[in-house]
Length: 271
Image 1 (cartoon, rainbow, N blue to C red):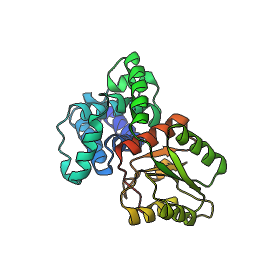
Image 2 (image 1 turned 180 degrees about the horizontal axis):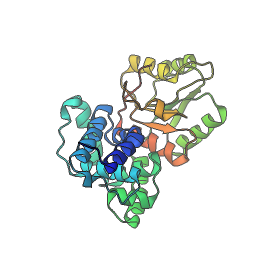
Image 3 (image 1 turned 45 degrees about the vertical axis):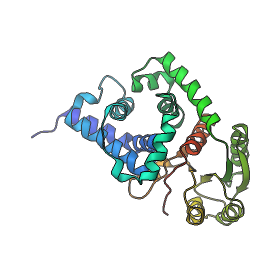
Image 4 (image 1 turned 90 degrees about the vertical axis):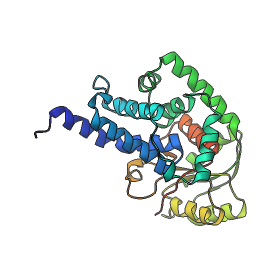
């Protein structure tokens, strides 16, 4: 049977934006496995019913809107892909938030959609989205404060990040430029959150440094930073639940840190 041009167009759009859809789903759920299950369910729903992909909207917005509908209305059973304790923690944290505020915050800050685009994705008015974003920022910032280790080799960026997280009420235990420096700081003073670049000054890996600290301390919320997020969003290995892209905006850093601290869970990469 011949493939229609509309089917080909939808498939091409999905392929282009799927890595970012998966990033959103993982940040939304706090887990790579659970997030990927929602992304897969979205694709299956579109294949079964093409009207779920709103052709009147730009392709990226239509894809995110389809996932949003799955997230809000599905009985998708993904309990088996998470440890019971993590699932309970996630649900407890989600229950604290004003409904829809977290989704609006992620779509706006992490995914970079404008307020009117978030409104289209969430099927709400733009005024409602503006209100939700204000609520989300206040709730997330007030939820937790902790001790942060920054792993970043560019001095200006490190200073900027340190200033941002300090303004949020967190304490910075140190700024490391190399793998060795990061592990020494982390071993000396266990952080509550790690904010890590990928490529460090001596060509060492921020991923390796994070994984070494996690091997000693267990689960620590982690936000990774990279100029090339598509290299980390391949689906071929464990991926970060919280990932921001260089060059970043202040709201992206604030949101990612608040989300990771609030959710108290993150997947890490294996290099």
